Image (cartoon, rainbow, N blue to C red; front, top):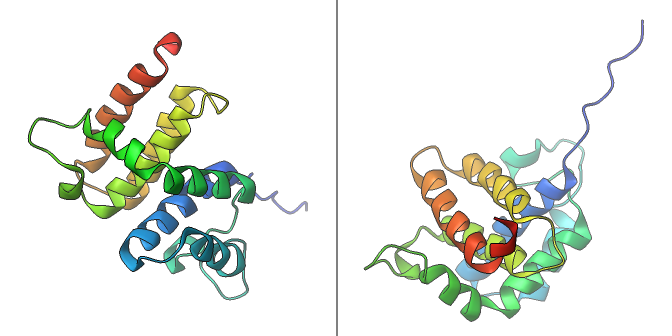
Length: 160
């Protein structure tokens, strides 16, 4: 009898999940982006014996170059990305009112949407919606979808 093949992983999604976790850590701890990148690459990305994956904060399959590009892009352009995101929030909402994980998701996604050489906008939105659903069970993914859709239409109008 043939052993079942392991289902294909999603290393690009893993990179995005790790980027959101690392952006959250960077904001909460105040640590330098390169320090957090190093910590994640050395200790949180890839399978490890006895670890349970996402439940233990590990990301077993992650595209490390994509992870680093998302992190550096979001960290280098945080103020610009925050202005872009804030322009698509409801009146009276400010970035500091958002849940810190939601803020990290929006920053990572906005950075990818701003990168014209990246994947199509709809792919970026779908990927970050999957990430949002992994972190939240309430209305946050719907909110995230609305903001990301508006951002994508503003940054990549030609794709819509």
